[in-house]
Length: 402
Ligand SMILES: *Cc1c(COP(=O)(O)O)cnc(C)c1O
Image (tube, rainbow, N blue to C red; front, side, top):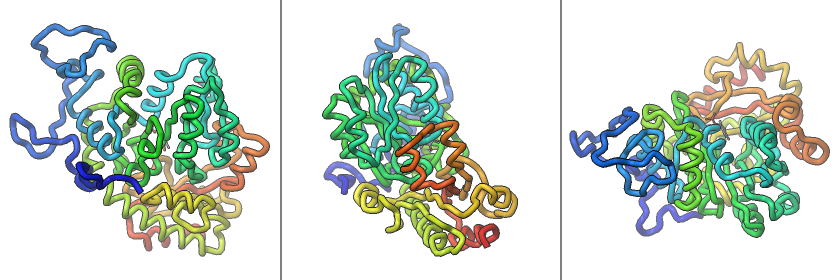
């Protein structure tokens, strides 16, 4: 596996608690302060251009850099094994900052054909409008990826596990293909978290997280992050962060930093609960398919075992006439909330309809649509398995499934 215990690097539990943090030099407070100030008092004149900020500049303005946000960035970089991290107001703000600072008219973007719908629509609508050649392929079909990556390709974008099919992308193999053609690889690792997979160690150039999900962990703050080498981060910092400007509130950064302290513990519990629920659902007579990377029945289970140190807490399942069951899920579940989003301590469930997603977000046909349907059928219930007692989660679903 990876090198989390290499000589001069502390373990994940320690990093999750301490990285980026130090006692406040003025008060000796042990817990981090929240610095909400938008501006900072200067003792020498500064320039106003994003391109002229020296590496050792003091804090100047919070859209450029803020001490509370910086603590979160240092912690995430330590957990991901990345040189640099920048945080944003949401996962989509992080995604936009990366896409809009790296791509230019005429470039090709090769993107996984099923992923987070917001990212899928941003690429297919906004990027295409700006003259970017967006090609979407099934990232489980390495030959298709190989054919799609041309010399014009600037960026390859994968997501693993992918929403909502839980398909797993082989990051090292895709990184090889990407780099052979001089492009860069971005991996949305929101479902995996740094506890499961560290894409940079596997060859990716950028990692994206919606911090709103597992990293925050409590469903009460939105945020996003991009992680990369110092060199790759430069244009994301100037053009994506400072110019596009979707920076995170220091208060949200503080909440997410606090959430991260328990990420290693929470991910273990999410995985255990998801495994228990997956096994229960797989044995249930009304359930026709369960998609959980930790189950031997998952088509990418071997790859998941190789690439993930934790199978995470996300699973999808199919039932006959699934769409018709949604009103009962909404009215009869007592523990699990029927809601979008994921990664919270509370369990969440929602119906993801294949026809709807195809019409609005993925627009697949032929072989690619068939490959999607092989996983998701007419649709799936996606469950973000929370930290409740697994018996209570199973009992809750029995209220609807019988
Ligand atoms: C939620 C999510 C996003 C978008 O994040 P927001 O914080 O909602 O903007 C991006 N990618 C994945 C995989 C997500 O689950």
